[in-house]
Image (cartoon, rainbow, N blue to C red):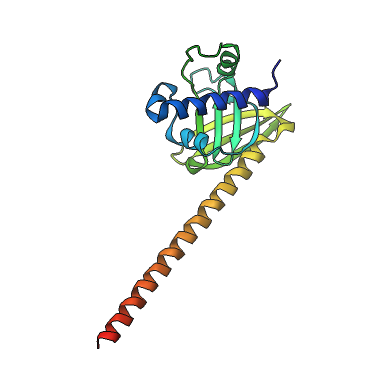
Length: 188
């Protein structure tokens, strides 16, 4: 059996090579959102990978296993069957569209409602638009803490970039204003 890390690496390499060969227009059948594409293009570091269970939105609200990649940009959810199909396919054979769900930290508000029951930790990811996504995992895996930590680090990086951008704009305005004052005093 191939280790999970190798499977994920192969799968991501397949998507990246398809992206490189076909360009963004050629990947329309992959159903990859723009932020998933940007994560793959920027080669985001995978911080944690493994299985998480997500509660379905349907009437029965069943728990469904998902292979998960936590990156510095967000959480990618991949149906386990998808990876098994990728592993069993022959090179060069047509691939089924990837059904990756991506929870980008820019759209994530918080990780809430951590509850320990039996062998599981239950938690809810609250998205910016108010949608709530319920997850569970074995208590010793710490997905909720790792997702929260990566989200906070992402938001901090964004805040630092915003401050730097504001400072650069202010410096640019001061330089322009100083140049105008000097040119008017020289002409007088």
